Length: 401
Ligand SMILES: [Zn+2]
View 1 (cartoon, rainbow, N blue to C red):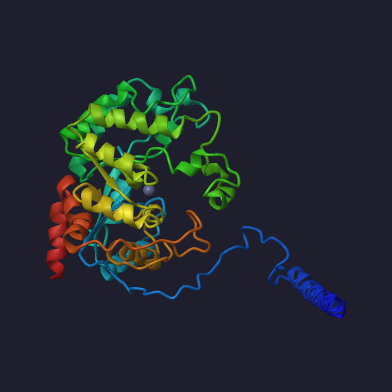
View 2: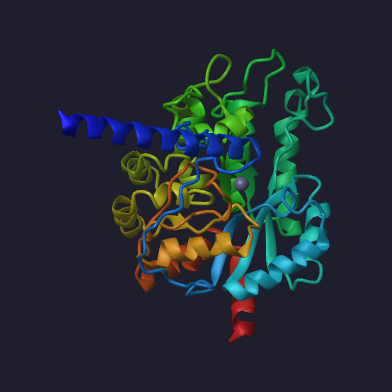
């Protein structure tokens, strides 16, 4: 009986103490301090810092000179020359020999060529994208260039002219399949036969076509508590393609694959691991099926680094098919995560300098690739499929020796 009373009093005291602490915390919360442990933290507050102490490899640069096949010097730098020159210095420090910008516009390449070409000893080269809307009004697809007679013929002529100007490939944004419309307002199908002459000409001119089709799985799922990218989509609901009005992810990827199959003489580069880094088994089947498909992993180390065993096996098996890409220019810290992912066996490290981690709230593991595979991914595969790179690469790396 006495024991029970003691227990009761002790419980009462503890309870009071907790109440006092709680009140303190609650007051604290109102003044911006940490929220009470009794409250569920909102996802915005939840950014757990790992207590784990494991080896961390200090990689300040890549082991071999790198060709970064996926960068956006137009979209990200917006004409800021100082930022461009700063990034080229960062390329030197990180052992990036060449960055391939994807931001020239077909038929109007000069602007971007001028921007990336000055004062940086041609370390930057570019692909060009086709402007489907052109001078048309955004809300009236009937007025868009792609729905005017002669659009494909003009594009083909522009591709021929572009190779003379030094354009090394062609880029298709995800708008193709998700935004570009026919005159009647329906979405243009990626495998619409009217574009066949474009794919064919790219093959003829040896211009690889880098295609960003669809997006991560999560972007096609409901934005709810089961969505693994909820945090990100809650900040960017416009990135979601879930629901009415959008084709499914599977439909988009299948349409892209039909284009690849129909044009075996053209090299296609599936941007972002052909947007299927969540399912490497299927991606492997596509690579087996389409010898003219290459892939690059810009902005996908978040996906690959959370499946290090599967990813390592995949890189070894498809070592001749993978190109290096970042989606940058990025800050130096983010570049270092690419080196660590590929070169080290580091465990549970961030994939981005941002906090919380912006593309899924998890961390990644390195896959410790051997030197011969690193060299293929960093440079040899790129040199093979983008013929125009060889001269620039030799001049750049030769000059460094
Ligand atoms: Zn990109």
